[in-house]
Length: 389
Length: 133
Figure 1 (cartoon, rainbow over the protein chains, first blue to last red):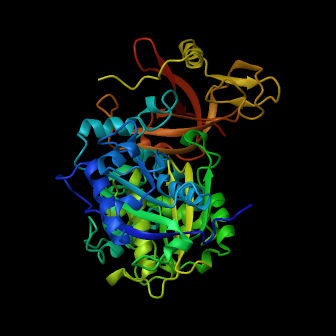
Figure 2: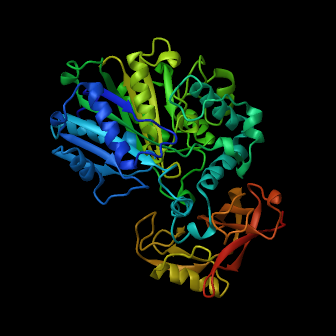
Figure 3: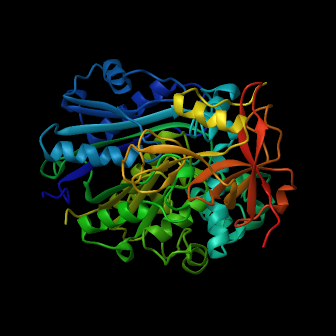
């Protein structure tokens, strides 16, 4: 079986303004991200033959990618909008890489944006929240989105002795990274006490254990490794990719504390021929703080159940042995919903180009990215590097 | 404001009819013997189609829980306990733990089913803490 290792590279990357952006719609943010990414790659729109987006919650469209292509008057031969929650971004990159490797397209733009902060009324936001969960056997019980993740946190605490301060340390580290990122939505440093002292949302999750609600978009340009050498910026190569899908509804999860990140990680590592110890940084999906602990464990950075201790002893903040979410993550950079992990992707491109400014991880050559969607349901892991292999 | 109602369907109506007569109904597979929840047209384990409805014991343990401090709508008075209950027969279901202080709920606590009105015509299973060894 052919491997995707080193076959494709990211040659353009860009974020729109993020945070509170009331003057642009989700569609406009998605278009703006594409224009910025094409400019970064030095590409004309006529050179794009593939477009992938995800639908927007604030401006949903029946055929979203087609509508965006129409807006830009580009005419791709490969075009679709995908939906797997927060895992969408990296799953899409997996599919786009395979499309390039098999000749379905040569240059694919992936762009995602939404306006969850400015584009939804409170009623729309609550409706969106209540539509998460099984429509017959979960939704009637009124679980909020934080409540689903609190079920995972509580189980982890009961099984492994994890404490709320272990979760809080994730929020503190992400905020410390964001303090070095001028684009981040929240930049004021916070302490573990600040997190534990913030309002309880769904026990054991406090307000500061929860990610932001944001506007924003980001896009990347993906092309074949052969073609990638002819662009203004050094290519960032896809070295490994893997997915794992274990359930959709939390009441059907095989385990509350061990996720399909185990499988997605093993698949990505096997393709890359690398392991967790080779990673110079990790961008881990942080919709709520406990997910980072579970991902550190399931992706092999530490033993199962030792995520809290690993964070305390290793350090995941700036200058730590394993910097995690160097842009500030969903907790402090921005979280416009399904597009959330796009910002981990663009940040990783800049880290591997060595253009991340004050937050640059010294000599970064390989990084791991992980996203999950649903309630720890669909998992995608990427390994990116400066060299093709 | 009304609570969120289960969306209609043949299987869920059989389940809700059970709630009406005080039964927590699970499907049991005639081929492999597995119990399952939520109800399906096949056994999720062996894909057998010889499924029958049985009344569960109603006993289980709290697999995990959370206290929702801000309700999803005015119909849900916070704080309320959303839990995953591991039933004695094997399957896990989401429910509420009721008739206790939220701080009395713990992972592993034994619980017993009860039924609560969700509308004029629909009742759904909820659970109460049970004192047993």
